[in-house]
Length: 132
Image 1 (cartoon, one colour):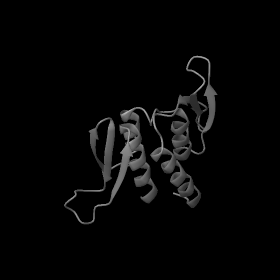
Image 2 (cartoon, one colour):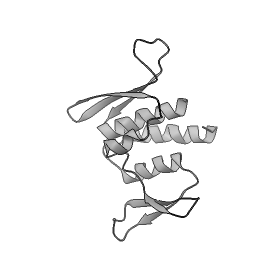
Image 3 (cartoon, rainbow, N blue to C red):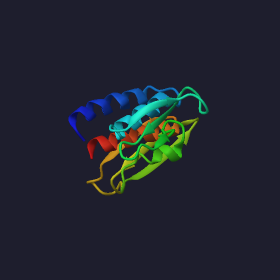
Image 4 (cartoon, rainbow, N blue to C red):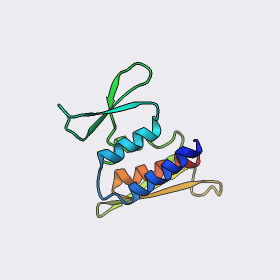
């Protein structure tokens, strides 16, 4: 990942760590970080003013941004291939760890995330992406 993206990713992780709930604005920022060449626009007719859609640079098709900060299924897609995730949930908050291997392996790298379940996954996954 380029150095300019690292600074952007650091700031995005900080914003996620202070988030108090799901945010379509943060979802859009995650998407922009992952797909910087896509063009965005706001869909305000059928989906509401806060829904962000994206147009691919390849074929001009549009997609709604994933609900990374709300849906665990979407947040999990941020985890780099080949890594493992563990999550403990209590009282509505989650502790997430994304790892390169077993806790018994001293070479294992690990990235934590804390907060609401989907947001905690986002934090840990983006930390992992930043260092891989």
